[in-house]
Image (cartoon, rainbow, N blue to C red; front, side, top):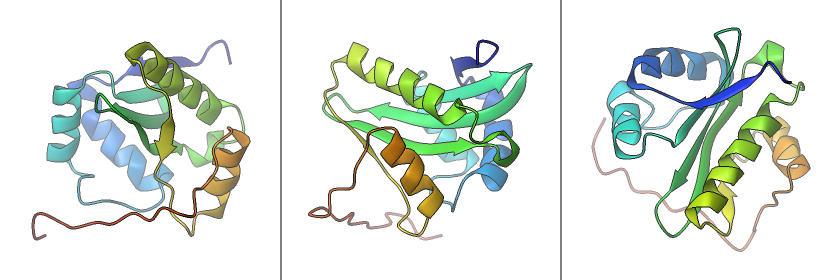
Length: 142
């Protein structure tokens, strides 16, 4: 994995990231559009982490820290590059970021139906907390 490079996304990466998520990420969200990702990168330029090899995008994770909690979103690895340690490298970089910022616990948004992701998160040391449920209200009509 020494040739794998983890870096923060730049505004010029956003179109490639959005296209990448259409093939590598499971499901979409209301904020998975150019404007939403632009706001993320403008507000926290180090939150969107990219994994690359030879200039090719292989994986992403959003490592958001709001000053209180550490949140992980959009851990995605290109399907033909899975099981090569890319997701683990992205999570390690995200966790290092959180610790440097004073974070104490990371949580991840994982679709209930995404069994493959459940195994990956569990292997990384994460576990579901069944006493919690996510409650959502869309603030804008689509």
